[in-house]
Image (cartoon, rainbow, N blue to C red; front, side):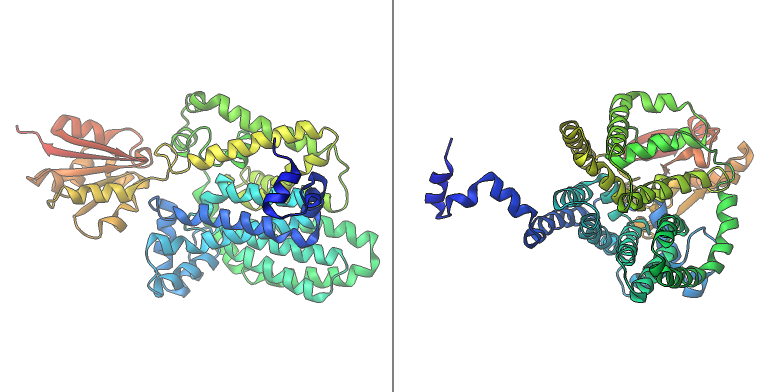
Length: 515
């Protein structure tokens, strides 16, 4: 072992500085907070930007791009279930010529990066420097946060809005003025313009504000001002909400309420979508009613471990006194998750991405277990939590977990040359046309086209008549062809000449059988 004295002579540093107790105290000082946070933020930015366009756009991202290509008035009145705020942003990016996958994902990557220091700063108002730094570190590498930081969508932008509004809220709790109330209302309006479920963030704040109102009468005027400004701020998007509510309820009317949504959310809050069963295998199980056990069985132990770790950390942190600002953390953890889940029992189907604003506070609640009675157990669980998160991060771009790769499918067909037509089967193939760029004639098979053999024959007539053959690109085929009519027809009348599988996208080349 090299002594502290030897190191001090080599580096010309006083030996006293190298004492563990002094190093620990230095990390606890306010003047040193920026260094680990800066390093963690740089690491988080690197993780998000280095592979920003590695994966192809999937259908939800492609729909955002299509929406952004429309006029602003059309975006504002589009009944698609979402507020128009993010559609406006995509519109301006496209108008500026920033049309590549990389540029369209930049706002999400920037928002995901900004959430890291904001998570530290919010956590620092509630816990110590070490716990706050741990929260920022976990958020920087968290696969769920990275996933949405690399997606064309509003979800990554919700986290900075949530954290900024919470900072304003904490300032009011400390006796802040009407300026904090105005800042809170602006953050709430921006968050609500991105997703209507930001309302559950406001509800969590409101629950704590009611208690503070009762115990601190001197702040009642500020709380009243905050409430009125927030109502006005949310009301700006009220008309869009009324337009969208009916359409979203109709779209999800057949999606069943599921108790499994809560444990699955616990799984994603540890390892994202790249630990446990893949999204592409869960989709048909949820939508078509296939036995979910067949989907879970290959990764059941890993999924169970992740759920157990998250549950153990939450329960362990709950042994601490829940009061004051920790009550705010608990409300911010529960309201976005339970609010979205309970809504799925009424109208709108549940997706874990709806609960993304709760993620930083889930990490803060779990990290708070370090100050519970069983600290050694908490430390071991947090190490296991971080390990599982890193495993999920490493696997995020693997073919098993990646988004549907229509880009590689289009490039593969283009590399083969020729002008053979392309038939698209399934909802997941929608982005194919973005990457094909008009090189081939593209035919889309809709559910109407496969309702019977005669209609299907008519829909495929142009492809059957082409002497070169045709390409079939399929992704999520159950969405357009739940009875597998297309494979049955092709098997009886065509010969399969080539087949290639990309992440969630199958490419096949067929020629018509000679009679």
